[in-house]
Amino acid sequence: MLARHNVAAVCAHHHEYPMFADVTADFVYARLQCGTDDMPTCYSPEQIAVWANRFKHYAQGGVPADLPMIAPSRAIEKKPRDVFAFFITGGKVNAPTGAQKLQLSVSA
Image 1 (tube, rainbow, N blue to C red):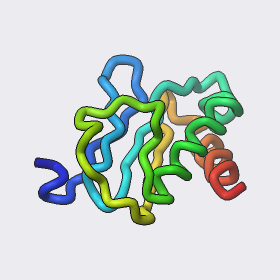
Image 2 (tube, rainbow, N blue to C red):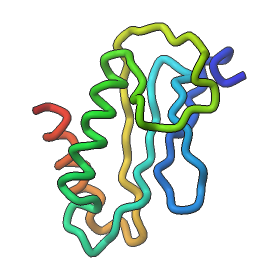
Image 3 (cartoon, helix red, strand yellow):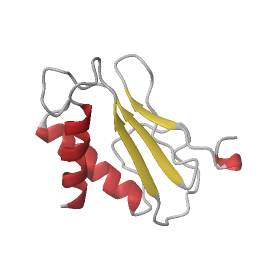
């Protein structure tokens, strides 16, 4: 139903909520919520690099093979798309720094 109405499912990286990475719209919406306020960039540099590669894959029209999907057999048109990714952690203190680091990693 989401795909039929071009509504993006949230790809939520969360400690409690289930994650699914299906592309259901002409853009991707992701919430990175497993970071910590103790880390200056919310996620470690290695984790940011992994997510940056996933978002590059999404932006190029693909779907990351290492993330769970609800309907993996559904045909997805391979075309460039926007990716909106947000860091949302406990105190949100370091979310802007994490977002900047992610943005630099995606650009590299």
